[in-house]
Length: 403
Image 1 (cartoon, helix red, strand yellow):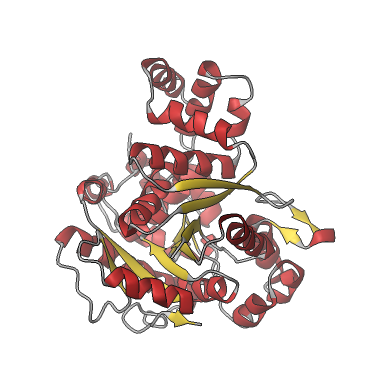
Image 2 (cartoon, rainbow, N blue to C red):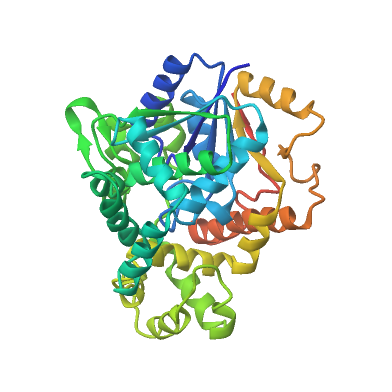
């Protein structure tokens, strides 16, 4: 069975995503498309618009064969760890032939060159990154300037675009892990992340979320999503970052600065900035504005706040990084996906345990158990944010969707 993989958030699933899946199938001739998808909290440090079960079902109804959850510890992390978590799962499945991703840059060789520079970061680049960060700018901006100073003209602009950033990180992780998975870059179809092309019914996910935030009606994006998604999302609850505000404030005021400092990404006194900010903030936007700085961007602060909410500690991430095993939590699958699951479960030395029912299939490794408990907690907190009660879509109640 020939398998291609996609790393995605589908937040929400739209026509551009369907194009990507169809183009991946056309160009690889694969029998099965596996998507590693963020769970209920996404890479920008926000709750997903729709919960992971609805988004996974939308993906399978629209052409994906198997949806695996990217653990919360990685799904709400920066690009490097987001990519690392996804590529690690795909490597440990041991069945993936291609990793397909969208990017603004169409030259795979160019993206590989940048990824190689960062994977084997020489003294010149590392010194430049440190120098720029000492000047008070963010890591991402410092890295972009360092790459610009060490590589051909144009590299800085390439690595500044959101999908190129992730593409380079996927390639870097493939390089560092010595992976046999072949990368495939597919040019994004017309609209960028926050843009739309009304005449061709394409819009970026960010633009669609903005439209839905303003309208509150799924009908407002009808032209930009597959018919299957409209029927699925109709009358479903939508969740936005501002809905987290009260819970985040509670979490911050209920913890000591010392405990907050144990949270991953809470560094250089950010625990104190957060503690002061919650005393003045009136909503999520003002809270972020009060904490962010030239060095710590809005998005990095959003991710930090989610990690505080979920209680993801630096010690957790260290343990996760050292763990040599993984699990692959199944959220949805087609008939082809079911065949792949059966094939994987028959392997004697599978490094990624396939989980379709957390009530029956137990994880022995205590580190992986901690990772899974964070996923379960993320679902419960998401329900609390979205429905004002837990258990609505509890991981202990929900079953993978089968097409």
